[in-house]
Length: 394
Image (cartoon, rainbow, N blue to C red; front, side):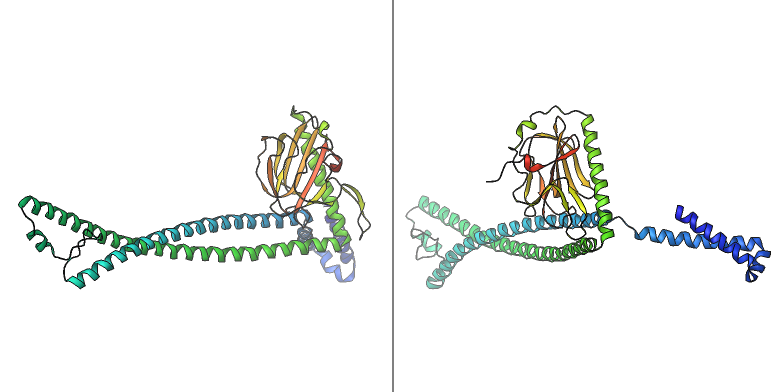
C-alpha cells in the first residue's frame, strides 16, 4: 500500500513537471485531461503491483498444495488397489467354481460315454451305470421274462426310476454346461475390468511420479536461493508459533491424565525406523543460516504404522501448514506429543486413546521430501528433546 502511494506521488510530481515544461503546456491548459491521464497511469501501476503480489506466493502454501495433490492421488491409488484385490479374489472364486463344475462334467461325460458305447454294442438301452443294472437286453424283453404280474410291476417301476435317473443326469449335465459357460463369461468380464483398473492404476502412478518430481524441483529451487530459503524458514517459524498457540488452546480445557513425566526415558518409539535428523540448533551448511529444529525426524518406510507413545486425548488430527498431516495428543499436566508428515490418519479430534494405539501411517506430506515421521514432545507449548524421553535403542 505504501509502495502504491509512493508511486502515485512520483507520477503526480512527474505530471506536474511535464505540465511546466514546454511540451506539457498544452496538457497544462486542460487540467481535466491531465487528471484523467494520471488516473490511467495509477490504474496501470495498480495492475502491475497486483501481478507482482500474485507471483510472490508462499513457499509453504505451494508445497502444501503439491502435498495435498499427492495425498489425493495416493488415496485414489489405495482405493484402486483395493478394487483390484477384490476383483482378483472374485476371479479366484470363479476359477474354483469352474474347476469344480469341470470335474463334475468329466465324471458325467465318462458315464454318458459308457452308456453310448453300450447302446452301440448291443443296439439296446443300457440300464444304468452299476453292474447289477447293466443288462444285455431291452426293456420289453425284460418285462416278458417276468414270472407273474407283481414281478412285471416291480420291473416296470425299476425301469421307470432308471429312466428318470438317466433323464435327471442328462438334465444336470446340460445345466452344468450352461453354468460353466456363464462362469467363463463372468470370468472374462472380471478379467477385462481388472485389466482396465490396472491400466488406470498405471496412469495414476505416472501422475504421482510427476507430482513428486515437481515437489523435488520446488524444494531444490528453495535450497539453491538464499532469499527463498530465508523466507521458507520465516514461514516455518510462523507455523511453529501457530502450533504452540493451538497447544496452548488445548491446555485451557484441562485433561486429567497423569504420569507422563514419570515415563521419561521409557517411552516407546512412535515408529520403526532410524533417527535421520536430531532435535536442536544447527547451522545450514550452504547458507550458514542458524536453524532450530523443534523435533526429530525418524526415517521409516512409507506406510509404516505410527503409534501413540503414551495414553491421552487427541486435540488435533488434520493438515497443518508446513507439517503435512498432523496428530497432536494431550497427555495431561501440560505435556503434548506431535506426529507429523503422515500419509493417513486413523483418529479424530476428541478421541481418548491408550499407549500403543494406531495413529496413522508414515508418509511424506510435510516439508521433508522423504518418507518418515516428524515427532515432537512439548511441555506447556515449549519443545523438548524427544531423545531424552524415548527408550534408548539397543
